[in-house]
Length: 63
Image (cartoon, rainbow, N blue to C red; front, top):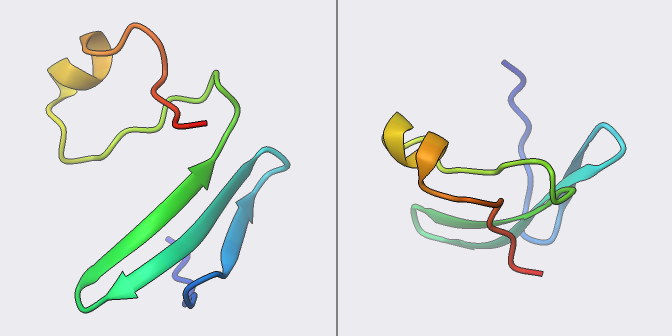
């Protein structure tokens, strides 16, 4: 596992197509923006596997 410290407004690039940006930090909450191709499925790990596999017919992206 790689641990990187970032501040609000700073980003991390994964490969050529994925950018993770820290939007805001408020106490214990962090707002993260993820830019990824539409064919990459991005889900929260706390969702049960059933919801991940069958819940979305197409990747959910707010673009």
